[in-house]
Length: 334
Image (tube, rainbow, N blue to C red; front, side, top):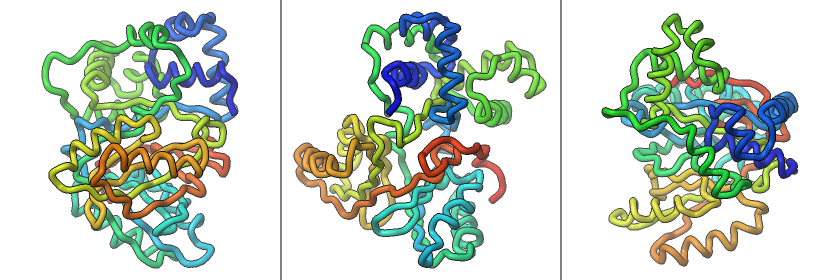
C-alpha cells in the first residue's frame, strides 16, 4: 500500500492534474518543493503517473469498441503484449471470464474497427477467436474514479485551478490533436515547452489547452499502480436492462463509487461496467446493491482481471506499475 501522504498527493492530482505545486502544497499543508519531490519519487518508482486522452466531447468523431479475444493455451499474455503496442488500443486485460483478453479499442470509424479486428487482431499467432462489441455511448470513464483521500475543503482549494468554461462549443482540430499527443508524453509540461514542440506561441498553447480541458476535449488523469491501490481488484460486468431504462440505469450505476467505467454495448448484454474493488469477495455485495437499485437489471456475465497489461495508453508490468507509453493517436491509419 502507498502511504497516506502518497494517496493524498495522487488524489490531489486526480482532481487538478496541472495545478502548480504551490497550490497542491497549500491544499495538502506542505511546501511546494516538498510536494514536487514527493511526486518525483513516485514517478521514479513507477508507482503513479499522469496520462492524457480525448474527452467525451470528441466521442462523436470516434468509435469505441471492446473486443473479447480467445487465445490458444499459453498464448494469452504474449498476445496481450503484442496488442498493447498498438496506438488504437487504450487498455488490455488478461481476464478470468468469458474470454482470455479484453481489449478496449478506439478508431476513427466502424470500417477502421473492422480492419483492425479482421486484418490485424484475428491474424495474430495465438488468437483463436474475436468478438467485438461496439460501444455507442460511454456514460462513465476513468477520470471520474478517485481515491477520496483528501477532505472536501482540500478539494475546494484545488478546484481554484480549474480553467474557465469555454465561451463557445468545444472544438477539436489538428493543433488540439498535436497538443494531446504531446501531453500524452508529459501531461504537466509547461506551456513554453509545449509551444516549442508544436511550433506555435505559448499564448496559443495556453488558450487551446485551457479550452480543451474546460470543454472536456482533453482529459488528464492520475493513475496509481493497481497492486498498491486501496482497490486493487478489477472486474467487468456484462449487464442487461430494458432498452427504455438504459440511460437511467447507466447514470445510476455511474454514481456508485466502485464504478470506473460504464458503457452501452452491442450484444446480448447492453451495458458493460468496469469496477475496482478491495477484494473479489466485495463483488457479491456490489452486485446485490446494483440489483437492489435497479430491480430489472440482469447480470449476464462476469470477468476478473488477472493481469492488466495496458491502461490508458500506458504499458504495465506484472505489479501494475507503468513500464512504457504508447501514443494514443486514434486517428492514425489502422
